[in-house]
Amino acid sequence: QVQLVESGGGLVQAGESLRLSCATSGSIISGRYMGWFRQAPGKQRESVATITGGGTIAYADSVKGRFTISREDAKNTVYLQMNSLKPEDTAVYYCAASRYSTGMTFDYWGQGTQVTVSS
Image (cartoon, rainbow, N blue to C red; front, side, top):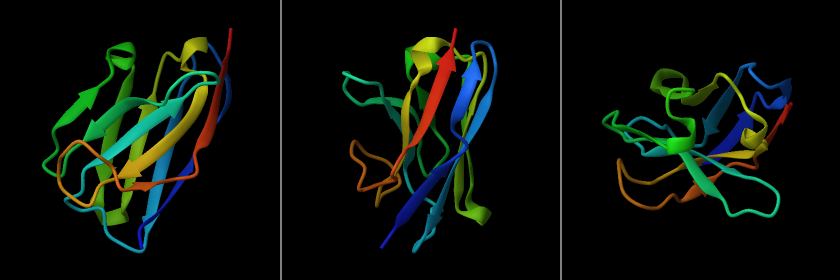
């Protein structure tokens, strides 16, 4: 069973940076489609950034140029570097993994880590 554990969230001021980490256990992430999602209070969960097993990356328009997703398969870890944070980035951030190298759905989810950006 794949388990995902996010870390790195916290309270920062607008303009600052955070790096989220997603560590996996129970399975390797090499070749898996991985993603970061977020959910703000009262809003639906949205995709922030995804990376296929082959390394193809996609970002939400709202974070392009500010966020960077990366993977370190040797450590079974996926990262989300978040720069120039804005108050509207405040949300619970979730890591997700697919059973496949690409696709439309994710099969495993972490418990989430809170990111709060003050103005």
